[in-house]
Length: 446
Image 1: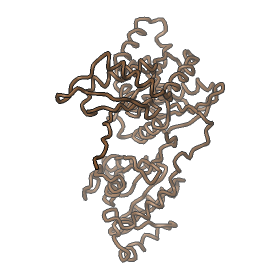
Image 2: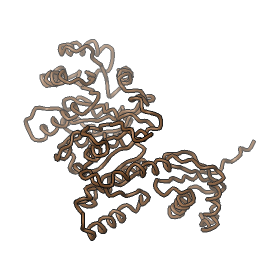
Image 3: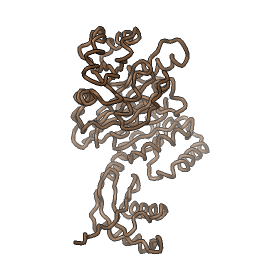
């Protein structure tokens, strides 16, 4: 698993300089709307991009304009947030339109940042155009300009090569002790993630505030507990999509989801005082999209002290809302009083062991045989489904391949039955389990 923090690369510049076209070229998609009307890309678009063995998240922002109207003001704030939150900035100018006062203003702003900035002059299609159109842009006084045609690809490979040198190498983060368990704390804003980490490490290492959204980036803390090491990853709160437009939240969500891909176990906090919300379920869903192990922490449990009816109702609500991941342990905790925190590390240990468990093939085939004997596979297109054998193909989470005569004919309900049989037969009651169906390889006829 790649444990690097996600690198955010932001495309900024005035409207209609070709940011969306470059975004589409880099992501090999048509995800951004390409339209000559200034201001069409009004919100951020983002995608994960692979460059050799390196991966980064590319964010396309709206164009920066003067604060003359509401839309332009919104676009300007979005782009300014990109400058604040991104690790690397690609600043595009229009080679055909020439250098403008707005470009010079943006350059002055970029001079004040310590981020790596690529000053790109777009809409230059050939060496001849480069010699004709590039010279006015040296006026901005930067060390290097990158001529480019985001439409036709001129200068594109050189830009990628330059960008690749600025990206951290895969697996290149602070050296962690061997066997470090990576834990990502996720949840809605103000649910108590930073406070929970403070309670765990017993000291004020994080900024803790009652203002929702204080943690705008992922923050890592290495903790040694007994003979084990843990990397605690604090992430920004994840809001509903509809509430993310005017804030730094879109970047925060990218950072939080990047943290999720880095961790072994996601610790999702739910506010006992507010109960289970739709957004809590969304966050839990993200953990399963990434196939992460998960522990649900019902924080602020002290608010329900003595109210057994509310306590019972909340636990029932959580059970009803998480039927798709009923394996996830639920702990009642309080960052404020420390309640339940002592139970956390033993539970993390149990979940981590199951998440990385390997099983002998003989034990797996025994489980499969017993499952098939107990519940005969159905027919598919007039043929009985047959399962020949199974093997474990990976851990984290435990993933098993079953060789079948008709892999595409396995109904979801029977697949779920087999997953439950593996779960029960192998003692995997706390982690996601994946079962994949593969066709039997045919011997080639000579």
